[in-house]
Image 1 (cartoon, one colour):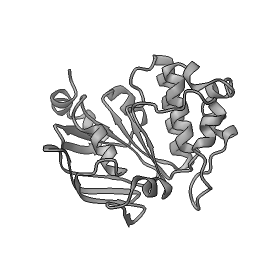
Image 2 (cartoon, rainbow, N blue to C red):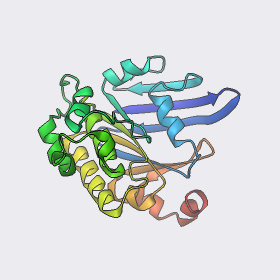
Image 3 (spheres, helix red, strand yellow):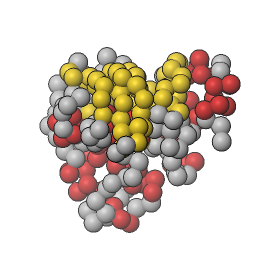
Image 4 (tube, rainbow, N blue to C red):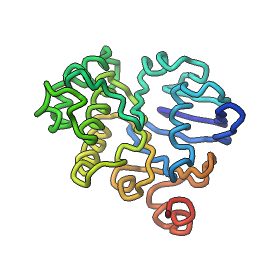
Length: 234
């Protein structure tokens, strides 16, 4: 198992946000964490990588308990995190942003180079010397993912990768994620776009008000319109 989360509870001050979250991601799997805005998806991701201090439970990555590890140690161990905010360096070029994320190759883990990433994201290949601040939102999203892959992670957390993107860019994002999976990268993706999740995911968890309320394959979720309507419909 690539990632296992057990009994995760998280707080922001006195506010209890996550309640006994349990989820798993296997080798080479794409797993979706689905839910409306404010359901707890981003807090789950931030808790996994150690950015939420007030948390209890157990987080095991690559067979090692990383619950008490600092964020930099978790990332250095091979867990990549792409936040929703697209935190690129706007004054740096595409190539310079990629260099910021470079880490050594890891055993039994896909190795990413700039040329390989420009094949994965052809848009970036055509703007290698463009500053991040002069890119569209979709291009910045691609750059954020590419920079994370320069760290050669074995698992990537993608937080709302399709949000605010044009349909054409969403199609390219689907192709990129499926290629990442084919290369051997495991992915946990948070989404409220069910159509996007259908195209990329093997399994799904539904989260509502900080609690997991469904776990199963995408086919099993398709067979439960009552669950989808209750927890995803606007």
